[in-house]
Image (cartoon, rainbow, N blue to C red; front, side):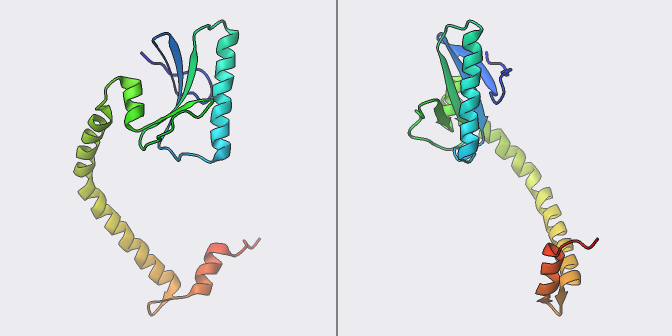
Amino acid sequence: GGRKSAAEGIDLEFERDGVLYLVSIKSGPNWGNSSQVKRMVENFKKAQRILRTSGNQQPIVAVNGCCYGKDNRPDKGDYRKLCGQAFWTFISGNDQLYIEIIEPLGHQARQHNEAFQAEYARLLNLFTQEFLQEFCTNGQINWPKLVQFNSAKATL
């Protein structure tokens, strides 16, 4: 079984077939900019260094796991990037888990969607009414007033 890692930036650790996997879980394949990816790689290297100095002799593989999406070139040099089905299969051994996870989420989303849509429409109407009262005259937007509200420097 897996466990939450004590290492910074590592979400999951688990062993399989004599290999220790360090996993950083992200939402999708385009989750961060270059400095965020660099920080993830640094976190992987730091965790590997700490494990080596504490006597760990088994191979250590760093994995960037993405909950959705695809990446057809998983080998990134310092780590592997597994997205969507490949990631869910990797951590569970179940080739269909990525679909099995979504079905209950879709059911719950449908249950709450009508209430959400009604509340969304109500709030949209309130915001529209407030915008019309504050920033419009006869349906025309008073752009100078709106820009001043949004961007004018504070008066002390």
